[in-house]
Length: 84
Image: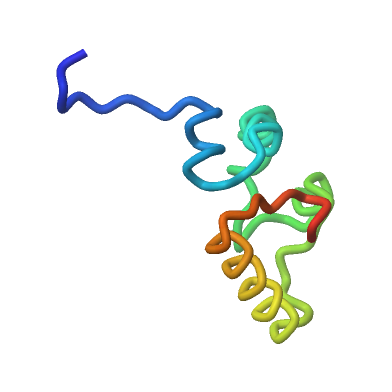
């Protein structure tokens, strides 16, 4: 490989870089097609397949949760699904 040549990160490298558990990234890879189909114009049944709704029900709560997530990451702590 030449020095400036691009290559995709491995799941482990992405997990370290983004501070996300490798298992989460692996789950995303396995569900890639389903995840890519979900969008603003997707039928509701696709949202149900993923087990969540894309509609924001509590914007203030989401803002607070996002702030806490950023604080935790800046402190160098890993954020796993169970934390949410």
